[in-house]
Image (cartoon, rainbow, N blue to C red; front, side):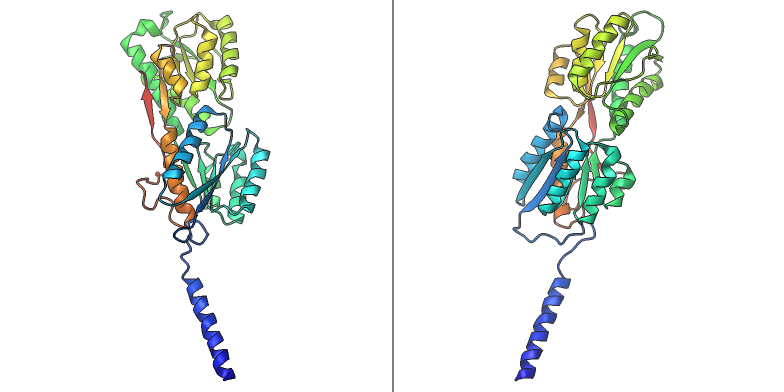
Length: 339
């Protein structure tokens, strides 16, 4: 009798062991797949809530999380532009046992620390919008969801070139064969800001325009309207009769530049994001063009990819998304808008 009891216990233990070995884990996320019916907990780290574009992404995440086929619980944190604060917020999300992380890093140069924490906690990480280095994302077997930053600059350069080709005298007001311009940069070292700044000018030159920055380096306005307005007012005082084009890394700075110009020049101003205020400025003729960065499409992709990661699936399984040629990202396309 005693032998039968021991045998029964051993058989039961072996059965449990075999069941555990078939538990549906995935190398993608490092966590066991969620059972059907379980709610998915997504931790969302946002670099700054009051960024206009990021606000549209946040709203889209909330919308698509509610519409998802699985129950998704969001825990969203505002980094307030402070990397130290965001580091602490990540620790809290990890302690809460979130199933996947959506990370919009405050400082992309410090993203390795975020990746290391996610990897140590065995939580899949989806970086978005503010692009860390490829090696950072790959170090935690994560993915990046965002745009190809150079495209926005290329589209701005094309918009200016199109205007020039349509009416050269309207753009080259002093008739010197050059386009005197200034650029408002979001922030130094930010990959999107650097690429937009570089490629707007480069594309205009490739289209045959001779670009002249008048010795003025890109003006850093930290993506903010008020900072751009203050600097534009100073430029109008010093160079107002010379400026023939203004490139801005986002619509908020473009609106600041327009306010700083205050009707004293009709030099075309270009933005990025296609925010509601930016679109109104285009309709009223105050802004020449913008580049749509689709916050709704970004939010939709993040929910789909984050849900897959949380369930131990391949990031893009069952979606229409494709990995970019770089092998670590999904890219959301831009679109130029001039009316």
